[in-house]
Length: 283
Image (cartoon, rainbow, N blue to C red):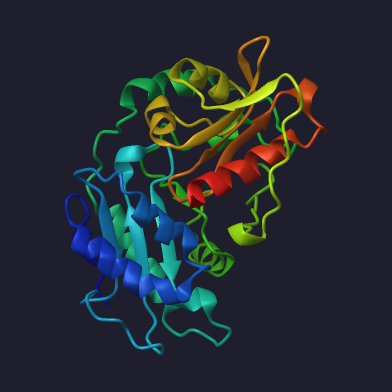
């Protein structure tokens, strides 16, 4: 069983072939699918897969795995994975072996310097043990920063997570163990029309000078270089000229870093911001 590597920088044919293979598996594979669509590839950005020829659609009965890998973005998400078994209700025979071989292949990749390297030490030194609503601190979320042997994977399906657990490949940095997340997929055509903003508020976009505030309001801060690349939508207090709510569209097309300042919560403003951001990206 082999894992094949395909550099993605300036290689649109590989990207399009991968998307063609993934398309029948939507929406389950949407994190990897959208990450490939987003682009932002570097010299060490790789597509890893067990498929020997990705110009050919594999038969439905074949088990395979595919992953986007970019350790250049450390400490942000470095890997997105999809396994063909994630949409199947039938027993899978090779999934565990495929996951293990993929992880071996990733561990053998060279570790490039992070595009955020100048900020890593500063960030690590500033982490605190203050807990969020789930009982997890920013220090917990960023525990991998100083350990290059830990790879941060994003939006891993529960079936694949179970395999990683059985293989003993998950580093539990949280006191409470794994913290599962739910993924909700929206049909834009079924979303309600955004409401008219209350008087004194307006739509706008965040600027670079706001990114420090954005980072300070979340336990999982993204770096300025990433925030600058992501579409965002904010709501401003007209009188103060300051943003009071914002949301970003992440590099896997998920809504991320949603925040509403405390004094404005309970008014439905965060919901309005999300709906408007989703419809804006779709348009």
